[in-house]
Image 1 (cartoon, rainbow over the protein chains, first blue to last red):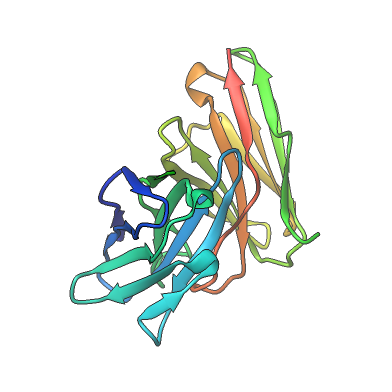
Image 2: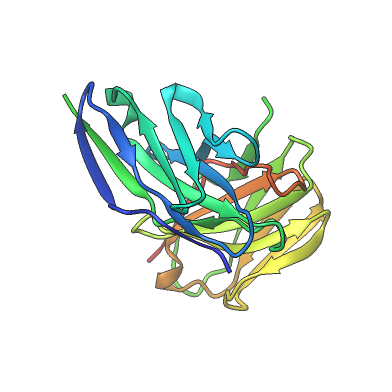
Length: 114
Length: 113
């Protein structure tokens, strides 16, 4: 079985501050990990993904995430928050033996204060 | 534009009615999905089709019936709508590779009164 936990349903940062959104996963086999962003009244868009290889992955809009197997984590970071980053962020995991079924975390709402 | 498109964007209806939501993707993907997002933004998979064949069928009431006429289309029909069906329904698609991401439509907001 696979599961995803996003710590902190709401994160608030000031514009220009570091963004850190936490994601931990549980999987008995090597997982494929994704971060998606959802802007108001829109569908989810892929920010970045980890499949194999380099554990630090870069995505769109200046976001990056690091896969840490020992900590079963895939936290999302951005050095400097912008007002346009305010959105809902979802971490998701797929494992090879599950018909391509993505399991999503409960989401984290990011608020950026001016 | 290459995309996943679903219609309608908004659907307001009364309890007991039957309604359908349509989804089309022109990305050439093999697999399509329906997800339900509730008022707390939680996402839950409902169904998945691969090349017109049902491969994932989560615990969803029988009132929900997906139909895939071809691999580019996946429609969702809901019978006897209930208040608890109010949610945003997202269609998504992906290539049939385990590391491929999902591509989502913009959602259909269903309100049952």
